[in-house]
Amino acid sequence: MNILVAIIAIAAVVLLITGGVVPTLNFLIWVGIALAVIAVIVFLVRYIGGNRTSV
Image (tube, rainbow, N blue to C red):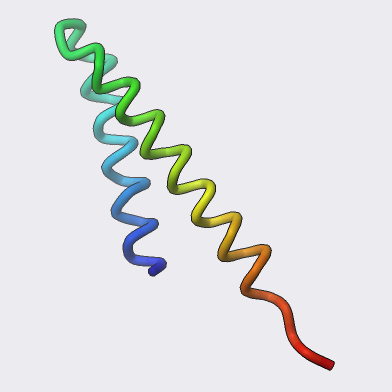
């Protein structure tokens, strides 16, 4: 699952850079932002939910 989050984050960065460089592909900025948000949510869910240990 960590590999998936890394791939999503890399894709988000690439799309953000591409969307910023090429004005005609401005929609890629929104796709990159959406992928970045998804990656952050997945990371937070794994970080918060994965550290629970039963005592």
